[in-house]
Image (cartoon, rainbow, N blue to C red; front, top):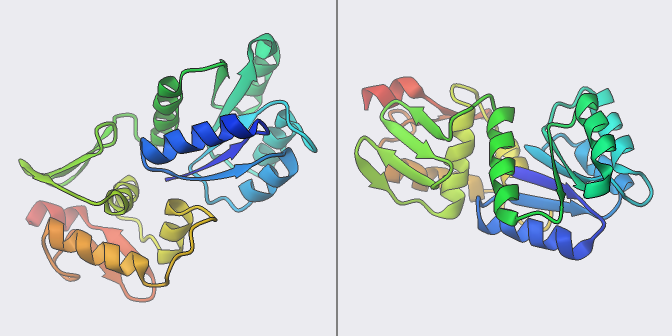
Length: 229
């Protein structure tokens, strides 16, 4: 999953970004002003936007209105000072999904972020299933039947993204956009390598495994094959 943080307090933004990268393993991009944040948000490659209200160049409420006016339904978590509660309520009515008052506990932030990402994917429960394959987004664990499967951080992130989009064809470009931030210089075959390792650990080939390859289109998590495995 990929998160955009629009926050001009550099140290706060860095702390939140570090918590998101080290905890749930999200890719994170940061913007220090509203104009840059809106420009990045217009790419629509994010699973969540963390938005401060008081920003240079363009304030948070304007950024939010522009995002929603563009029919972008990406979940938005507002960061607000305690004396801004009234304006925060109006922002919730205008399309924000949740808010946190500063100062806040990073553990609470992570919990709210995970909940908003699940909600944005239409999943209320942290446990995802595909046949006999299960993935716990809170514990970041994967089981096939009763067997625990050990995955690398990126293998886990790819599998989690595919399980959120079961039966949907996901292109390599979409995976790159949602799983890597702008600062990472990736190689063209990195996704293929991780998919190959995932298949080996989960069992099956391109034809028989739970992860299908559709030539020239991308990948699809096949629940039917999971049930047959």
